[in-house]
Length: 377
Image 1 (cartoon, rainbow, N blue to C red):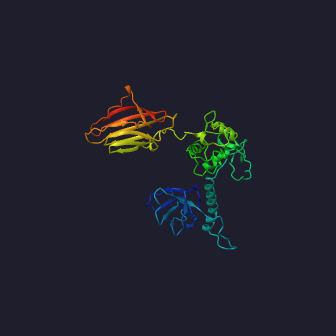
Image 2: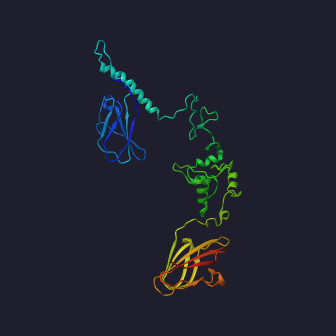
Image 3: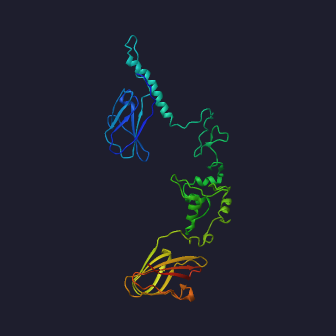
């Protein structure tokens, strides 16, 4: 027979039900067909002929059907490809029979094998036609392969390229090779102390570790490309405005853990017995206060240190009774409130299920300036 058609593997997506998967190329034996199933994680399983599938259409130039015993899972990939062994099985005998069937099979076989090889080469990295490429360099453990300056080969550079035309220094590249954020912090000699800035600096400026354990660098060069390229540890510390201390200590980072977030979970507070109410600001600065009894004094614990600004929002929600509920603002010792219009506190809405909103700002840790929106519907 003649071989007049090109060849490429057949690929289909399973639906969890179908077991019959056709192929459109010539095979000379059932064992010449290889069936592989690839799952959603890219893991491939080669099926066994006679155990996992059967084949029909052997010798048919138009192909045949691979029938699987168990339908592949939905969205898994089923690959049918030619897998003829690279060997010669026939042996002509002196004065023996030389049939047209035997000759056709033996002449077809090299063509089928060439098609099989060409199909495999389609998935191989290739260079443009006419381009001369020098041999690969000797492999370097942990090296980063890139095209050389003349464009005709590859090198393993000592520096790491993050962006075309921009190469990190040898010192900067050490961060990429850090096993984790702790190792990257050690390069900066950040030391170990209790405030969260230690983690915040290493995990945001230096970068959180990627899936393969390498630390990422974050920064920008003069044209806006992502890069942090210090020439040395001292240069990096200057870039980050860390000063010239050998290590950072508590005094370097005093108060830096008190920062404003774009969003935070609300703190829910219930006051159902007449008496004083103390709200811990360490649990949140947005407070939902359900009030069903009088508050004889309202104070805060864990306010910001003097010199640091903070904002507290209180949504006061009255119970469903018609009984008036009052708030006495401040405790006279640690928490004081100031109001506009002469300093008189706003009058609380006393209808059932009423909602009043208070916004409070403090600059010294104890004096809170407030404003109110009353009787929200």
